[in-house]
Image (cartoon, rainbow, N blue to C red; front, side, top):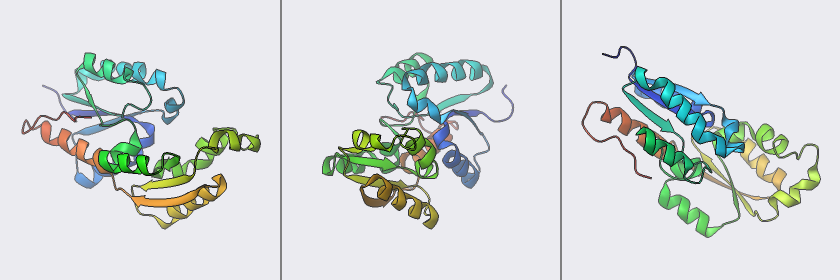
Length: 210
């Protein structure tokens, strides 16, 4: 019989803070979190194999494995791996969708297709991931190439924090975009983990449908 924590959550590093907060708040002592680097989003074709390696390395030590990734730009390749491994993931195409919820995100996308989205993680790491990551610190002339088709920056907020809100507004100003704030909380991330927790007691099927 397995001893100790029975659920492994293989997570994107961009979700580490949020998942840890949910585990602590709900006292989900059965959960262990192992994160892959958030920078894998820059090379999404590498996400499926990295997740498969984690699953196979951990299979014998955990009763349940759950993957805290959406599709994240893998074009269905992650789902192909998870189908083979018999493991479920977060719903949707990306973190914006599972934070905001399917219907809300669809409405946002349809109302203004030219929207650049930020989460708490992206606000905290805006300079590193956006300014430096896109080379705008050294080549500001690239701004027009990257953002010519964007009109609005929408901040999908997980935890209300005046400091983060101010940083998000500054980010919009730096990119020359209008600013919109929407509090989402943890959205389907929390719901999905809660369902996994209930599922390990055999009360419901823990599969989360995308």
